[in-house]
Amino acid sequence: MRILIAEDERISRRTLQRTLEKWDHEVVAAEDGALAWEAFQRGEFDIVVTDWDMPEMDGRDLVRRIRASDRSRYAYIIMLTARAETLDLVSGMEAGADDYLPKPFDRDELRVRLTAGERIVNLERRLAEKNTKLHAANEQLHRDLEAAARIQQELLPRALPTMSRLRFAWRYLPCDELGGDLLNVVPLGESEAAVYLADVSGHGVAAALVSVSVHRSLSVRHDESSLIVESKGLTAPGRVAQRLNALYPMESNGGRFFTLAYASIDEESLTMRTCAAGHPGPVIARRDESIRSLEPNGMPIGIEPEGDYPTVTTQLAPGDRVIFYSDGLMEAMTADHQIFGQEGIEATVARMLDHTLDETLDALIEAAINWQGSDQFTDDLSIVAFEVVDGSS
Image (tube, rainbow, N blue to C red):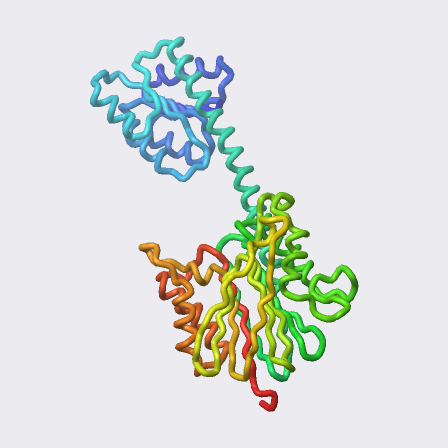
């Protein structure tokens, strides 16, 4: 151990120094508190043995300065004192001393006190090493999560398809954690498109990995492995949900399931086919200003091996808007646990009928933030929407 002595009485100082050096400690001795403080600032010490009464700076002030310093390593402090009053001892301990030893000191008692100090110092050192390693691991994990979040967000639509009668928009606000939301708009041929929004249960890397895998499953492939395109044309949304349900049983995904809202739209016939597997159904805002939401019509993906997922067909008209959203929007909550809910979403959509689709999506996010009084969401907030326009516009 490296030990600092602060003792103004020469004989006591020399005796203490020789004793500690015989026990194989590295010792630096100072003849008063001020010099001891200078020595402490210049080097690292495991243990400080200090007299109480000294000129320039007494032991209690030295202890206070040591404890107020920003040294990363802990120094165990033993006070040498001829004072026997309880109040004096309490005062020294309150200043930051760990132990005390009466003067003149007994060698065996000094050894015992040093042994206790060594145990504390070694424990603190091991704890500091573990904390350093833990901090490094946490920093690496944070970097990995940031990289994973960037990869996940790169899966979001980079460019929305340009179609003569359909206009698309989307918004995505991740929460602080790596989440499981995914959305996309997939053009299919010249007049058709698929829109989907999925939400994997839970947060973190495992949920994100499932979402990436689902995204790949829903990518366009012109072969038998495609989930969304068949030889006869687009796969019915209910059939897409059934095939995903077979591919992603929750037992094979760490107990994780996901909800899915999926739609295929034909801009020539203006028919929309949808399936909402455990997911909030989309809001449909009609040109006549009527607002309604489709109901979920199936269990979340992965829960029931033989899940039933009907396809619902809706006829659209120019001026209609369809808005899909994740429960991060619907479950925005006030301090007294009142959720924004479907009513808040529909009311906001109705209020924005004379505004653009992009302005409507921004208004939904702003309304949710105002509702909960914070722009920090506890879950990812995702919205994807489209509107039917006049083909001549």
